[in-house]
Amino acid sequence: VSLSAGARIQAIRSLPMPFNERKTIRLTSFSNKAPIQSFRRFRGSLASARQHLIIWQDTLKEIGGRFGTSVLSYFLFLKWLLQFNLFSLIINFCFITMPQIVHAPNISSITGFRGLELLTGVGYFNQTVLFYGGYNGEVIVSKPAYNMQLAYFFTIAAYLVLCGVSLIYSMSRSFQKNFVLETGPVSGEAWRLLCSWDFSVVNEKAIQYNKNNLAIQLKESLSERLQEKNKMSLSDRIKHLSLHLLAWLLSLGLALGSGAFSFNHNPNDLRAEASTLLLPVVVSLINLIVPLLYSLISTIESYSNPRAKIYISIIRSVILKMSILGILCFYWLNFVPDNISCWESFVGQSVYRLLIIDFIFCLLGIFFGEFLRNLGVPEFDIARNVLDLIYAQTLAWIGIYFSPLLPVMQVLKLFIIFYLKKISLSMNCQPPKHTGRAAQIQTVFIALLFFPSFVGVLSMVAFTVWRCDPFILHFQFLFIIVFIPSYISSVYIYLSAGAATRSRHGTVVNFG
Image 1 (cartoon, rainbow, N blue to C red):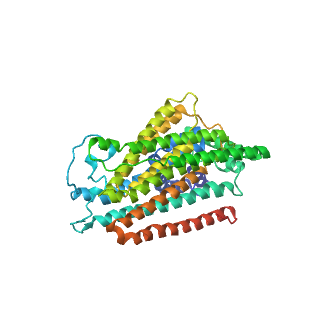
Image 2 (image 1 turned 90 degrees about the horizontal axis):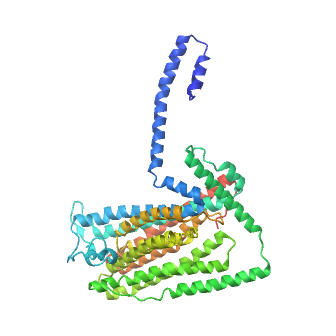
Image 3 (image 1 turned 90 degrees about the vertical axis):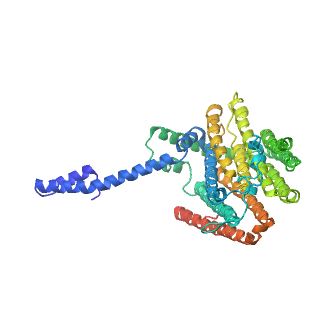
């Protein structure tokens, strides 16, 4: 019988038999129970070791306990992107880069390393395996033969398939958790207070983090309910609508004006190579200055709902960044192929420079914008920081076809940014004054990463494959292996999420 040690002893003592027989039963019982207890202890140690292997677990709990779910959502999103890039790095290196390195890369001329290549990506790196031009696309003679063209295409296509399926699955799960269940019949402050505590947490530090996190979530819910009761008069509504209209006109004007920049072509000397950094610097300055202007515009609008303020900032930043990326992609796909021979490597080098300069500006923003400007103890700008991550990930996805090893830089960048942002958050930022339930923002982040980011990148890669002669025959297959599995998975996730919600609430939920 599966009883505790004390209960088994009491049960044996109550048996109507001699002491010697009870002693034999006791020894047999404990000897049989020992392997089961050993197995349970082994399983518990494995679970504990697994928890310790989860990256940044304690740090994320600390951030959630001190600053709430809204700030925590940024770091969870960063960790999620890191997993994407680690997976991409592993499969690209194993199936594309490693076979090319082992069987002699296609290098026609070697240029000496001058150091500037770390910023520009040209010169010494011009024909290495870092970019498209370093892969000869021939069949590697081995047993069995290895077709580099097919390996290059199918590896990138498989990665895009898994990214699409993962994005749809994560978006559906996050929607179910943060929208459907949060607004269902059993949701509310009483449910959160009485039913959301994790009784498996026994560490005092973790208990304190959970208490702080629960208190912040209750404040968020109560804050939104109080804001819903405050109703404005008709004159105040007209005033706010006028301010919003003016703010949107200014924001769209800034976004359109930010796309008016010129381009340069492939450099031939050191001075021309250095001049290629001008465009990434201009783009990074636009991404730095214009969102600050958006913040000033947002203060004029004076939103009472914190979530509405965050959503408006996200929409404006998305319009700005996607307009810049759209103009760059249009230039790369329509003008560069007609003027540069190996235009794929040129595009890869351009994306490389954009990522490098964006990373440098991010470091400068953390140091000068947060460490040196901490007199007023600012709040953590969630919308701006998340949009910076989405912008960088979009660049990494665009460049993965033209530079298979680009995820290396993205992984290093995300690692460094996580620790710098965590230190800056602890030293320079304060918890949000105006709390608003921000767990649902995580769903918005994933949705923005899927559209327009991932869908736009997928369209560009498909168009690039169409223009590239070796891959024209496989273009139809690209849609088969990318769109059909994504559609099937989305339908399956939709149905399973609806079934899970109906079984939980006993009602039919319309996902719209």
